[in-house]
Image (cartoon, one colour):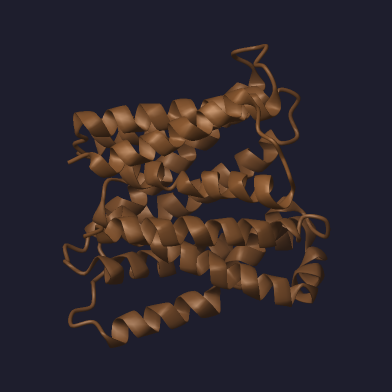
Length: 296
């Protein structure tokens, strides 16, 4: 029988692919920050509806505690920071170097989880994570060209983005587990709702201060925004629940299925033909995922 965290992760990866494709349509009309606001602002009705359903069916409602508030708030801030850094990476010269370092997010999650968050990873799990990371790096180099400079500003930005994303995942897990309840779906839903609300306030405040005129553009794109908000909340519910049920590094590794789905779409619909290094990387990612599922 397939573990429930696997199902939640696959749901999250699929929804992330769909949401990313829809969110790219907004890039031509608004800034990256405003596009990020769309994800949170239009997600509020869906996350509140999800929260209401969970509470209506819950036997015991989780009570907020200091660990939850600190971890969930930090996770919300770090997720926004990681996204901004990743978007900034696209504007830098040595994008290939930076994006390769950003792919180390899985390994960073495993190392930080082991050192500071009490996660114990089996030997086969470590092998799966390393193989998957090497596959991601190979695909990235194959798509963007040879790395000519191993350390520069792009590398620093990419590493910082990966670090922020890895800490976000670990803090989400810690926040959700802080309630001490067995209902992972409920505690993950509470964590998700809190984070979406505070992230909306933070990003909305930034847009109001820096370029309030973009709010008109955001409002005008409400149809696409509604779709982005719905898929974003659905995907996030999958990620948050999976993080609560299993080690964040395992979830991150299995989540790379989304990367393979995206590449498959590019090959099928856009007739892109991957090179030998890309194909080797794709096979390594698939091998890493299989090893992970076999890990105890």
